[in-house]
Length: 132
Image (cartoon, rainbow, N blue to C red; front, side):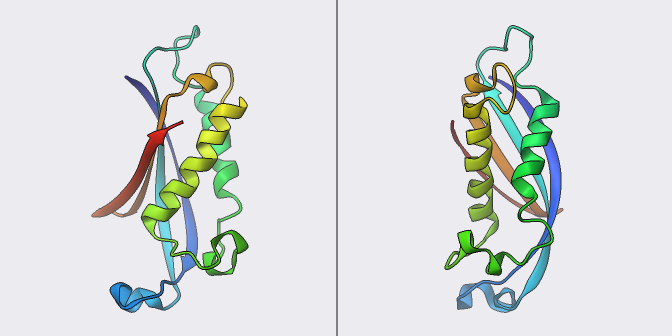
C-alpha cells in the first residue's frame, strides 16, 4: 500500500463532562499536530497517491472553522465530548469527502483509506483510520 501524509496544527479550547476527565472538565486549551495519511494500492497515472498541495489545502479548509475556537460553543459539537479520538474521526470524515469530491485532484477518488492522527503532546496521540 502506498501512502502520502500531510501535516498541520490547530489551537482550540474545550472542556469535558464526567469524572473520568478530572481537571479537563474545566475549560482548557489544546494544540494538536495533525497528520493525515492517504493510502492506495496503486499510484495514479502521474505516479502519486494524491496531490500533496491539494491535500494541504483540503486539510487547512477542514481545520479553519475550528481554529482558535472554543469547541464547546460550536453547534456541530453540541452535546459531544470533543476528545482526541472524536476529533480524529471528525477530520477523517471531511478528508474522505475531499477525496470523493475531487478536491484532492485527479486520482483522489482512488484513495482507499485515510488515517488521521492527532498528536496531543510528544507522549500522547490518537487516530482514526477507515475506508473512504
